[in-house]
View (tube, rainbow, N blue to C red):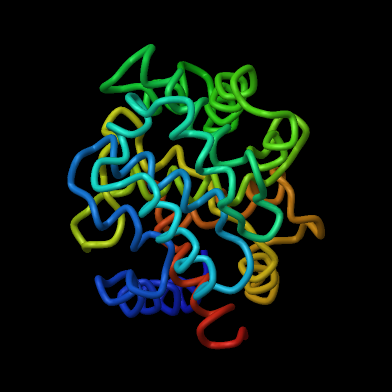
Length: 254
């Protein structure tokens, strides 16, 4: 372990894992709510469209949440089909007509099966599993209820996708809330089981720092990077997401 590198990353975590990080990040959308299911639903939807310009993501994710009203869980469970269909005109880049209604229908099925622990139970790794299997389970639970075109918005880790957005959503739900950023709602999942949300910026920074050798930004690369970070923080390797992301995006890289 490189102590100098660890000191750098720890310093960046302290700098960026703070409540004032929230305003410009998609995690600001689920922070509008206090009920567990409302946080989960708006968190999943916000993370699903989390690519592109951050300001545009936050704006569109906020508009999407507004369409569900003050109680997103109640909308998911109680909206009529015509009310769900009215969401069809919501668009963000490749998230197009019918994608939001499809996500609502899929989530309704998950919460109908278990209104309290629905998503957590699906994502939680079972004995001998990693988060990868939990993401596969979530995708399989959603697929029968969503339009074919919407399926591309739920990453297929079974085919090696890095699943950056779903890993980010899992981070939001699992990591402790003590610093006022993540939520710590899913207590059955240890932060040690999380996988770094890997995108082009995080990957570039990680390679510059010697933390990642794999050239592709896929699941194997995300797992490799997470393993390297676990040498510095075995119980919570994804805490360094804030450092790598901020070095790459906020500070313009190494």
